[in-house]
Image 1 (cartoon, helix red, strand yellow):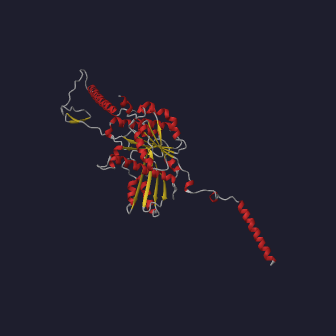
Image 2 (cartoon, one colour):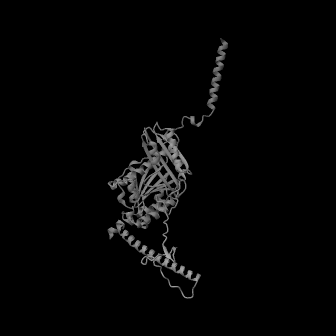
Length: 450
């Protein structure tokens, strides 16, 4: 009996010693009780959306009412944009120059108004990770003040993302040229940009769509895409995408982007997702070379591995050389629905060409004229004389190759003169058109003075 008690006492002592030894061993970080792995504890990127000019303010007003997890600022010379909108802040500038009104189609006036505000613009970027600039190019503030904003943010350590619209063709050539020049400069200053020509609105509306609804449809597509992009980096998934991934995809300056989201349910949801995710009628990815892709597939409990594979393969096949980062997340609100968000990034193929339009070189016209039974290419045919050969005086004393040289010099002189005349005519027409458009686009405060 005494032996049994002695053995039991020894076991108890050894257990206590073992427990003491285990307590001294440091626990792995994952098992520390103070470690918090809830979704709220993960890094949250701070995003600020800045709408510049009247058009940018209009787009942002609609986005700001719906989009969460971001802060919003409207920047303009026109004080009339300032309304009691909850959650939207305002940066009004240039009131001494514009008397609180717009700048019209006067980019230099807009730049002069925005230049002194660079410190305030830089203050907007404080503690932010992503800055999204939205502007309608072609007007003064939208075109030139946006460049001042981009210049002020040149040393910003986070991501600068531009979303720009181009004027309708009926708004005139001068306005469109201002927009294109501004766009070329803005692209170089920002990490990445998306361009939406207003003309592409006609691809998504019918003949009887009201004008306000037409613009709202564009804004809704932007909201869906931006909301999905923010969700990618905010919500942890089965295969997670975070801010570091986004920064890797958007690194460098002067990149173009294609951002799109597609949602589908039912039997054909897989086919619909693949078709819609890679094509957006508002803008095309054809004017840049895709180098990096980030996409996320979201669905409910019935999202299958087969569906994930099919969507992923379709995206990879579309751009075989691109580097890909992907994520998968489950959400109970998508019961029988799949949602795919895709961001494609790369340098411009031809930054000088019209955005979202393939650069096509016109084919040279071959004028053919008969001479001695042979077709001679490249010589101008007189429109009034038709096929009758044009006779030229040959200087006395010239012969053989000298005659041919003189003939070619005469041809070149005629071609130069014709080209100069055509150019001069075009310049006169453009000056007339620009003068008309200037009258239409005179800044509001100057019109009042007049």
